[in-house]
Length: 234
Image (tube, rainbow, N blue to C red):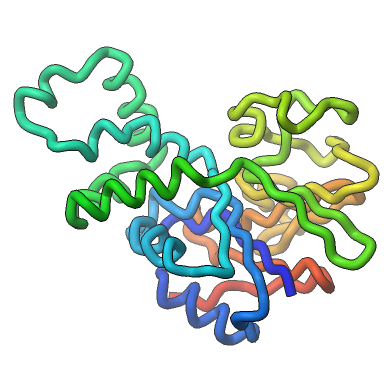
């Protein structure tokens, strides 16, 4: 079985684990996490460290992980002098991240040893922007936000990084006719109250961001039968 979840935003790791156990996720199954496991909530770094140990779970890069990578200079040895000497670009980049909930992740990273911080950053740098999977006669493209500047004949390798991280599709957006694009990033409630706590499923794409960034419970979608599961509450 193939599962996907997205936009955990520091959700309680114990609740993530208990949900996977409840739905029968096993060593013979596979799960893709479509980015944004960090920021806003308090356990994003714990989730990252756990994902690094899971052979059958793959993290794809989200815009929040990308912001973290752009601020990787924070996790070197910082002294008062080096902090005073941050460049204007570094200050601007850090400001963008903290405005988007990065403070909890910064605090979480400061609580782990320097060596562990290094491996977390390396792990994120190796994370992909998208993956393709096939289940029976159905093909899926998995990515964080959908695809900005979409053109049906354009090769995936010809898009830039931000096209996979910051897209905001509408209900009228159409992607590939022969492959279902699965993503998060845009809370499903923004498409209408009828989607609160549920995935949005169209004939060319599926959005699975149930709004954990705003305090809602994430969902897990099983691609084999399109059944979704709500994460265990705190």
